[in-house]
Picture (cartoon, each protein chain N blue to C red):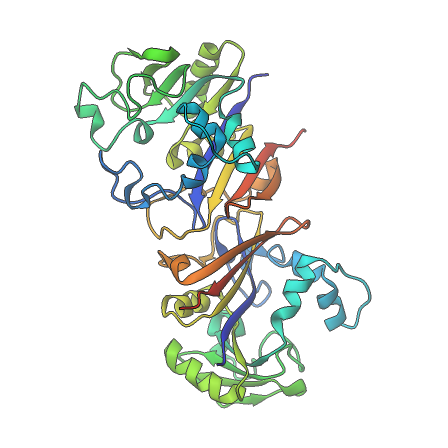
Amino acid sequence: MSLARVHNFAISLDGYGTGEGLSRDAPFGHAGHRLHTWMFATRWWHESRGEPGGTGGVDDALARRFGPGIGAEIMGAGKFGHPGWHEDPRWRGWWGSDPPFHTPVFVLTRHPRPSIGMEGGTTFHFLDAPPAEALERAREAAGGLDVRIGGGPTLVRDFLAAGLVDHLHVVVVPILLGRGVRLWDGLEGLEKDYDVEVAPSPSGVTHLTFERARG
Amino acid sequence: MSLARVHNFAISLDGYGTGEGLSRDAPFGHAGHRLHTWMFATRWWHESRGEPGGTGGVDDALARRFGPGIGAEIMGAGKFGHPGWHEDPRWRGWWGSDPPFHTPVFVLTRHPRPSIGMEGGTTFHFLDAPPAEALERAREAAGGLDVRIGGGPTLVRDFLAAGLVDHLHVVVVPILLGRGVRLWDGLEGLEKDYDVEVAPSPSGVTHLTFERARG
């Protein structure tokens, strides 16, 4: 059975998955890079950019689960672009000509547009659909592989609230952002459906893994 | 120098230090005992009730820092009693005739009343004062020892926001309460003033320690 998986989803201690004041120059707003410095330090991240070095511990081991076994991603409009991107017909995402997805990517938006083929196997499809329907579409495109629920926080929260996530990897960064978009709102009792594991890293972040409990 | 310390302050993954629907029968509202089962399991807790058994690991080691070196506590009105306790002249707290504080305790309330001497060294004083002034009063009463900032979440947050806390021990319990009173609201950048340590426990909770950084 194809799973729906969230990987490397970073939040602050106070639960924010992105900051306030998102813009073309600040994809995470006032959070800047602070939610992801743990990831940039890993060997996996360095490898993906053709650079030597990087750490090889638990951060690296968990971060590199991002790719294997994934056949499609679903992301929110807020991950694909800055506020207002849908008014820019030339906007093709933040990631340059060869985005790091290498699969079909379904962007959930109220402003669908024609699909965009990129280098490296990524194709952006634009879809105005609720979570369950989007997941069905992504599963078809994934050819039996898993579907990554890519973020941002609103999208992940919507998929969690709909009971559609099988594997959730959250990385808690020991900072207090104070404002932005929170992951956990409205998810009372979520833990009951999952086996929860907590794994700290010497880098200071804490990895939470929610694995759907076997019935 | 006398320190202001917070100990054993438990919150859910989504940051709630107490639930919703507080009442005389439900001091933590819909959270019930869930924020404190880790503590009830410790040897320290068992000892305090004259019972054998209990766990002896990191939960126990950190939990029993609660008492030593403390000469006074400050607590909020919401910790001292259920909503409306101030209308009940006979209310003397949740803890019976011998409360577990054994020091002067300053209850911050807009409805001060005469002090109440209890067994075992606890005296409840009632004070309508802002955090800094309350801390000054408690320090005087503590005779050179430290002051415990006892909770609930609103009180701890107010003292953190005022920069008055030297040592903060928070215990993150892997449940999602969804509603209640959050600890972290409005504390953007708090970590900059502290050395932060994250220590997981086999019980499933995670201990966060904020220690004021030496200037």
